[in-house]
Image 1 (cartoon, rainbow, N blue to C red):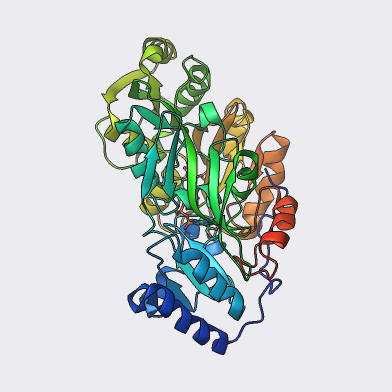
Image 2: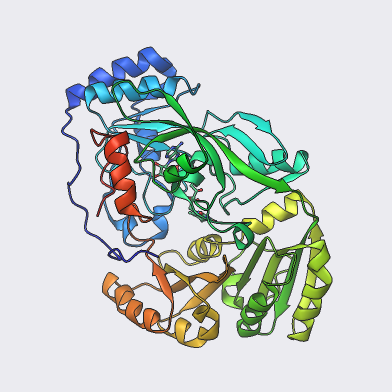
Length: 444
Ligand SMILES: Cc1cc2nc3c(=O)[nH]c(=O)nc-3n(C[C@H](O)[C@H](O)[C@H](O)COP(=O)(O)OP(=O)(O)OC[C@H]3O[C@@H](n4cnc5c(N)ncnc54)[C@H](O)[C@@H]3O)c2cc1C
């Protein structure tokens, strides 16, 4: 967890000194590279490319965080280095965009320039017993579907299943599968094809340890055009929904069943007020807390026994890929997203971790007015989103020392800077992006 400021103030540091004439000259080159239909300066294209999931933060959504001058849509990976060479020649910043679900504003072009939308580059090239190779715009859901068709499963994928491979690697971190495999910078990637922002940019293939440094770098150190990610043999998964009288027993039980082997792929729990905001489902019972998980068939009986012993009720057990993906879309940031949708403008959240979330649940929730924790079982510890009623940045900040005293680790979803090993990433970016043109404005 980062110790960076919770709500940094935007500055102009890192703004490349380009002019409107540079942009015009670049647009001419982009049209020559990808064709006029794949270059847009229409307001609706620029507007769309200046938004991401950061509307979930009352701080970020109140900021004028940036807008592009032009958006381009490469249709082949070979076009990417050509676009980058042109942008470097004209000194215009390049922000690479996947599906735009990043929730820290990390895909919003702070200083304008060109946004390169990768969503057309969605080819899945190869599925083997241990890996999938795909272009950066392939959706995570498509990769999971391809894996299942092969008798495999992804090591992990986020609750935003429509997000792209490149975006999840560069902007995301965890999801279904994290309980077993940790976060996406922990060996999930076997290889990347990456483009650096130099005058002679080409597609460079990096394997193993050389590929890892490009994960969770917000595209500031290179543009991922293709990646090979890890899969493993498909397990017989059961989607289990249980309910409890109160969320204390649901959360304690989540912690208890998280170590039953074979380990679950996902375990999420919510109190009744959050359940009420989730999409209607017969397994969500009004007034009851909910515990749901993707459980290995060999662990199902022990898991159900533990739930019943804790006073819980099994509401349903479902099979198959569609159910498994559906359950994933109710995990990580999504319960907060649904809560905010049900009560617009009311709630903020912090990302939290540590077993203290469960061990000191009342004190943790008591830190904020209307405090409600969404619980995820993370990698070797509890993880969650602490939602509270929003009144001001000061009120949000005031709770943080109290949470830390309780032993809770905090990550602020209200800042847009590179937040994982920023010094290392900056040193890498100095070499791979010597003119500071890749998604600039990401250093504290
Ligand atoms: C409701 C909600 C739920 C979420 N749940 C999860 C979750 O479960 N787990 C999780 O990890 N995250 C989650 N997120 C955050 C987000 O969904 C992930 O970061 C997501 O995987 C990003 O993918 P994307 O295609 O939308 O990327 P974008 O948002 O388009 O981009 C994200 C970052 O990656 C960079 N980038 C994109 N493509 C490339 C590329 N090809 N090469 C280099 N850089 C690139 C962008 O410049 C940006 O900095 C959630 C967000 C929301 C709003």
